[in-house]
Image (cartoon, rainbow, N blue to C red):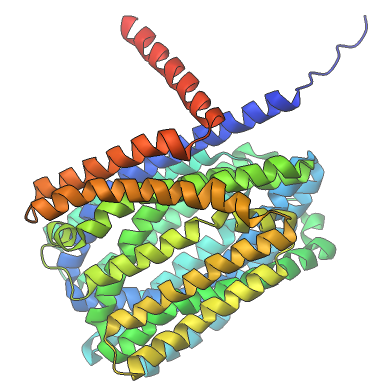
Length: 529
């Protein structure tokens, strides 16, 4: 009997399978993000009330020091993920495992450097350069040491987590992430109910315990289900791949340094000039942005490995189409939540925190707008990363981010209030957005008109329609929970109507309609069982 012919898939079938996979991963992560954001609203409020503004601000500023120490790991993680996904797109299991082992050795070495170098440097900076009340110095150093342990486990787990992402098992990561949110929620409830002793130390201890546990779950799961994560001793020392990851990571590191200085460096400036309470306001603003970012990350995280895998398979046209969709849909997802927050920031913070720190509302608005600008061109960054030509992109964007810190510092020296210091982030994000579009035209041969018509205009029109409808209850009603609900409903209605007719193309509408109809039929069948 003749051998059975291998199953082959047409290009259309591959694209349909790819789309289904992205949609399932996105929806799963989106659901997790919504629940996580809801839990975080209570968690952050309880933690702020339990710790007080001073200790809450200290925890955030000490965390910003740790960010400087650990951001290198994130840059190497991005490089590892790129090589994993590209190799998977080529379909070579052995090659993927070789990349994994090289990345594993690299991150083990980085973790050792973190402990040996980061520990004394971080403690020196905390003791002699930050504005910390003398009676809280010992506690702040202890918090830093605990956070360093958490960062160690984070570094070691990066190759396994990156492989889960590259293999597009993102729904599993969403489940684990939701479990982490639940653990943090329960812990915050215990904290607010009353804890004897130093609550800052208690908060740091259990936060680190949760993070270490979750990273351990990621590592065990990846090793258990992915043959790509098999440890092969002699493959650890593949110096050729080792050097490629380091070289590729160098440009990611430039961008990472810029991000560290623009975001966490501003926290240090605020601490030096305005004290821990300004850090508390900045920490609240970042928490609001982080919860919003998880909603767009649900799409970006699901689509990024797919873009790289498609580039690895040689289909540049489909890769560019998918990168534009990443920019468009991640921006629309962010707008859905950002518009109500921008309209009613003051009331929302009072509803959430009762007594929010001074400047929390303007900080929130500025950082949310900066984050929104980043999303509208995020697809181009993913696409350029996929082809591996990142030197100029990350070199320039990293430099622009680095300029944020001296710009914010100059604003403060010029006698401005803290709002202008934080506004430096928004100013430089405008420049970064414009450069990404320009450089995509050079490297990807992607005309400016394509991005403008397929992404920018469609997002702007949807946001204008949503804002105009939200403006009606905002102008006619006094601040209240009913007004907040109406602003949210009206802006969502505007996004849905205009987004469906204008922001989506015929193919996207048809996909949503057909799969929505199938979902309804399955649900009816389930009810009839």
